[in-house]
Image 1 (cartoon, rainbow, N blue to C red):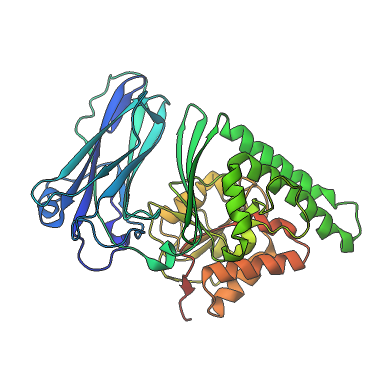
Image 2 (image 1 turned 60 degrees about the horizontal axis):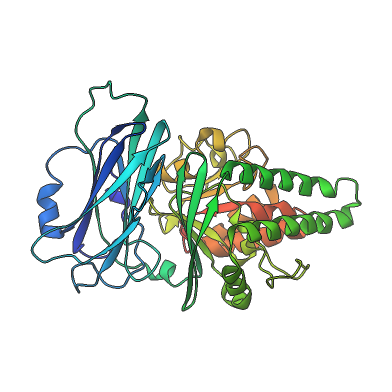
Amino acid sequence: MPQDGRVVAEGAAAAHLQAELTPIVTVGSTTTLTVRLVRADAAAATTSESPAPRIEGGGSGGSGRGEVGSTGRPVTVTVVPRGLRFLVGGRRSRQVRLSATAPAEIRFSMLAVDRGPAEVTVLVRGEGELPLATARLTSEVVASDDHDQAGLARASVRIGTADPLIASRPTLRVDEEHARGRSILHVALCVGPEVHRFRVRLADKSRLVQDVRDSLARAKDVGAELPVAERAGAVEQALREVGARFADRVLDRRARDLLWSRRADLDGFVVQTTGETELPWELLVVRRPGTAPSDADPFLGQFGLTRWLYDVAPPAAVRLSTTDASARRPATTIASASVVALGSGGSGAADGGAADAMRNGAGVVVECGGSGGRSALSETFLAAFSAELADGSPVDRASRLAREAARAAGEACALAYAVYGHPDARALAA
């Protein structure tokens, strides 16, 4: 159902994003996604018609400047499909300008390729990478058209304004298209005024993810036979080799060079994504391109990295759990705006993982990165993270200091843990 109550937008919206999609599609057939940008006064009448089944919508806080329609600035509408793919020659993005007299309407044709649940995320962007609005619609790809489902799934969300606390941060933006086991990552790396956009094709993403997880497992075993004093260093060296190989696989040469040249400006780094939660971005090693990783080369996670999912709006205030048990609830049974830990006690991926936890109302999610939820979380990391939040630190600072504490305690694998939420969120007073 729509998540309009979680939209981040200051003041009255000048326009709305509306999207329509067939809720059931036959495999091998085409479907059309219709997107409209409508002025606020017209949208009020449109959204009062009928319930919108099988939809999720939400604002992300924008990164463009000014409201759509109030200044006439053009915006870019981008569609990111999963289980569907664009037709040959189809465009994933269109630039439009909202008219004062009529809605701006765009149609995107896609082919249904993967049986089962499918989805599309619609993004409206201004001048920056953080969307001004997002809408997520789900569909079902079936074997035949022998069904009685009719009508359209609809979403309508407000187009908001910039969240300066996010828009000004160093950012890796990842829009992932996924179909037939293949992923296309449309990536933008932004550090200060510098922006580099590139595309990565992963012919077998699941194989890459498994290879990284296997490498992490081997890295953890490296120091098993070493004295305690030497163990952490050996594990971290093995992790640095994993992170360097991973960086070479998912970043092009210019992106690696930009991270290295601007490494002094990476504090508060944010990974923005349509829902890519499997790749361990925290483990990327920032190093001089063309060189082997050294002990002085930092991991991206050491810069207080947090993750931001587009179709939810993380709150700026969160509640700390009072017991370890409540901190490890399954993703489907959480309390709104609480801090939730996944990846221990059997929860995590089997219960939907970080994306489902955030969509079910979590304020902050800590997930055991790179392990698929099978490993226990670092107790040092969790304790330090909670203590920092309780002392008033924002999430990004708590993340950075918790990783440092775990590292100092010899738990180097805490570098791989992912933290989802608003980087400037703080704990509510007890």
